[in-house]
Image (cartoon, helix red, strand yellow):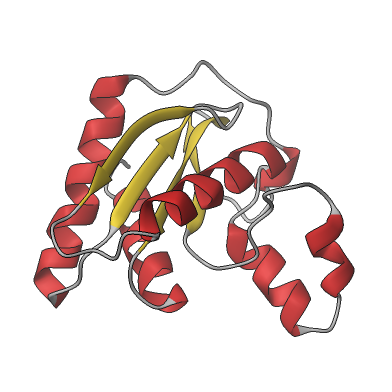
Length: 141
């Protein structure tokens, strides 16, 4: 994935079949580490296409995963970008839109140079959420 996703065009929405493959990649990576997650996959508009919560994942994680995916899709950036800005003292960034999530774990899904959706993961630390989201997206290439 390019570091310049915010300049990419949106493409045709991710299919349910494609979304299920991404979720399976998250589950596989999570199992390797003994972690549990909620996994949300949205279309380019940030609308939910797929949602899964692994057993024993905390109840609030599904809402957080959805908002991470929605933020990554609508802003065409990983949510870690917003996290880094807040860490640098630019907290105003959280006022850009209701529901904007400034926590790692939301990543745009790019196919043929266009954003077709986004994945959001929640259930671990922000770093763990980012690891499984990036791992899933990388599994598609």
